[in-house]
Image 1 (cartoon, helix red, strand yellow):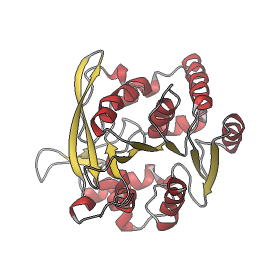
Image 2 (cartoon, one colour; image 1 turned 180 degrees about the vertical axis):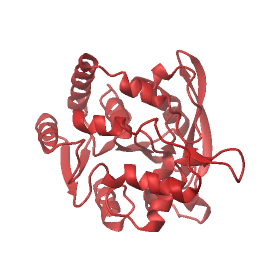
Image 3 (cartoon, helix red, strand yellow; image 1 turned 90 degrees about the vertical axis):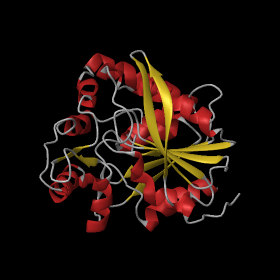
Image 4 (cartoon, helix red, strand yellow; image 1 turned 135 degrees about the vertical axis):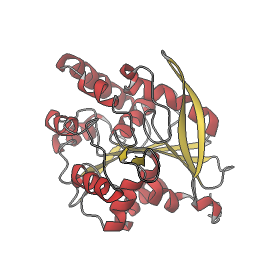
Length: 298
C-alpha cells in the first residue's frame, strides 16, 4: 500500500515511550516518519554509538510506503541514560522495543538493523510468534570477529571534547572511516546527530551517548562471549521470516565465513555485498537504498 509522502511526512517527528529496567523507568526516544496512521511499519535500529537519525535517507525513501520508526537506543541520542550501566546489554534493548512495538501497532512489521540494531532485530525475530515479517541485518551476525570488537573498543566511551563542530566531524570521519567514501555533506549528516554542544553556543562539543556504555562493552569476558554467541546462533536459526544479510565487502566485523554459516543454518536468508565499504554500509546512496528497497518490495 502506498501512502502519500506529504512534505510533513518527510520530516521526522520526535516521540517517546517509557521502558523498564531492573533499575527503574527510563524514556526511549524514537523518530517517526510517514503517515502516522500507516500500519505498515519499518523499524530502523542503529549501531553501538550511533542514533536513529542515521536513517534519514532511508526513511525519506520509504516514507511513502511505511511509517518509518527509528529509535534512539537507550543511552544514545534523545533517550535517557540508564542509572545502572550494567544494563546496557542486548536483552535490555530487546525489552525496550516491546513498548515501542505495542505503541506502533503494526499490521506488517519490517526491521532494518545496523550492527547492534541487527542483533536486537535478530533476537526479536527469533522469538516464538515474533511480529517481524522481514529482517535486514546490516553487517552483523551471530559471530562478531574479536579483532573488530577490539578495534571498536578502542574508541567507545573515550571521545574527547571538541572545540568546534568541524573538529567533531573530523573525529567521527576518522573512527567511522570503515563506513566507506562519503561526501563532505554526508559526513556533516553522519556527525550532526551524534554530537551535542554543551554549556551554550560557545561551549565544547561532545558525543551524544552515555560514555558508560563502554563499561558493559568491556565487561564481556571470553566465557560470556562464547555463551552469547551460542545464544545468538540459536535465535538466528529459529527465525522464520525472510532475511537479507548485507555485508560490507571490507567488513572486519562480519566475515565471509560467518555469512556462509548464516546461509547454511537458515534457509530464509540471502546475502548481498556492498563494494568498497567495511563496517558498515550507511544506506545514504541510491545504490545502497535500492538494495533494501528491492528486498522489502519482493
